[in-house]
Image 1 (spheres, rainbow, N blue to C red):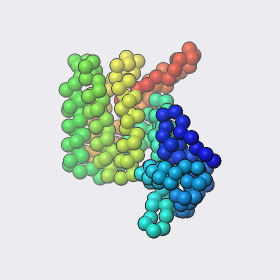
Image 2: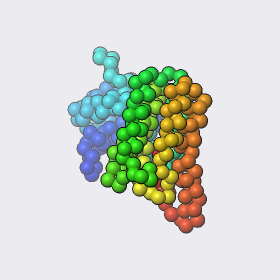
Image 3: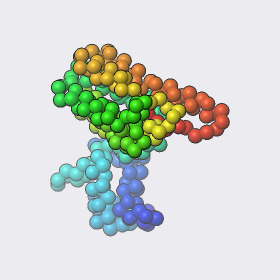
Image 4: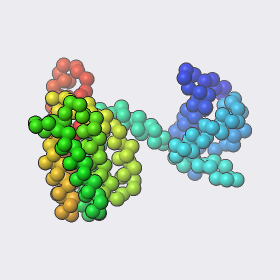
Length: 248
């Protein structure tokens, strides 16, 4: 099949998309060797240099792996980029439910595995965030972005204190969506404000080495905005409004 560059996509991008489609469609199962550059170039009717660059993109994305003298092999047929795009398209309730699943387990593990430096990072994030709040405890209007950054820094510190590489990597991908939703929520009066006592409860449970309390405090922290979102969704569904954005 001949491929033509479309819109702003270069021909390399088009080949990348074609190869992704073949991978996700099961053309080449995990562990198998994909056809060589010459065969792919003939199949797609593009130059070998274009195929080489496209394969490099997919190697970098973690779908393929090149072995010197052996060829290029399929590592995964699921593109991590698709996962992230799916998360970015998710509604706020979905994001909060995933946060609860990830962060509650992370807090439980952090209570068992934390190190002194982990606790210091949590405290530093909360102290810095508190300095940006007004007398009512809400972030100052001129500090929403930085306030959100400190909140995310706290939650990431909790996750990292679990010392689980896979969990840290997953949350690292996910945290950009969390931050985007948080910035939108901070100036939304319909969403509950961040309560520093709730965050301190998580920190104190982790510091005390109490996994059950750490998990419970994290769930309590995130259930508040989830209930607010569900209430808004219930009200807005009667009016046909769009889903709100927001998270603590």
